[in-house]
Length: 390
Image (cartoon, rainbow, N blue to C red; front, top):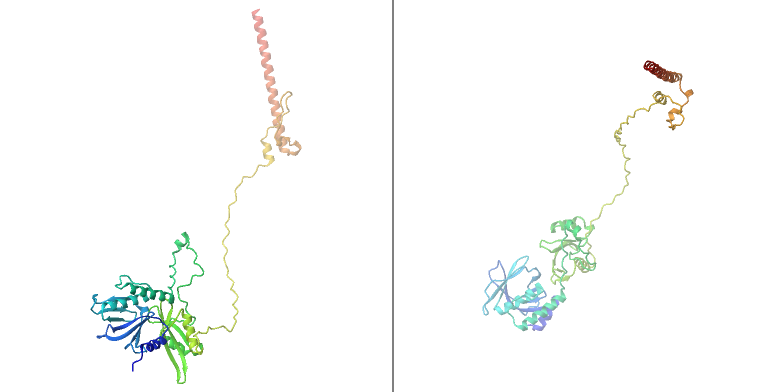
């Protein structure tokens, strides 16, 4: 007895909380496979769930379309001919085949709308179908708001000095995901060795996945049979992160991923935190050794050579003797050296001055005698001539 479609739909809704956007029959195969297999597909959110038929309430497999790189049309568009699309994902390439081009165009429109968060251009759909796509886009935007734009790359120092960039607003969230404290850049084998060697440090390690922009979680659980290592994949999406479980769980941050695992394990697991070593002894640093620093030789400045000043006695030797001023003439003040008294001079200088004075007076007397002789001779010659004339 077949199960009613309404009951099947309710059972499928309990598997995931993702909204149903589109469903229908299709064929699917991997690139390396030869034949297509028939499935009944449901597009819920950005995940394509595949069932064996429309009466099965548990999906056979699913495709995460958040990893979609491109969607290419392999066969030419013909209205009544089957159409094949190739979906290039991060892990593999999947081919989807629809019975006719109209159905394939609807699948293409819904898939690209939920992945790109916009309605693709040049769709060959009716106006009513375009309105349904718009409703799906609005619902997907409300469910997954667009991520903020990443900050611009740092500017070179010479540009920063010329024109500094405006300060970023404080309320703007950071686009770089905040890594938990138990994140380590190790492989799966290294993470398992760390948990096995140091179980007292913790039991959960975050690490990068082998897929680009994805993460993984390695944990060590104590079971009745012994410790068990488990690894889980965490996929990065435009709206946050998805924990790849039987029922995918969407969270907004990596810390929420860690919180989800702690809650589900009733806090019996703990994040791996390596203990930091501490010192237990205080050492006294040795006294600094004395260092002999050779001081530079002071620079000698040559002294200025100044001629000795003449003494007063030698200067007095070259001064002429003082003379008494003649009446009616101006008196010229003598140099200070002329005011020296003879008593202050030594005996030799006194003798020199005395001899010079005597010579000076002797010369004056000789001139007087010569002048008198010349005058008397002129008088005698004049008298003799007058006598002769008479």
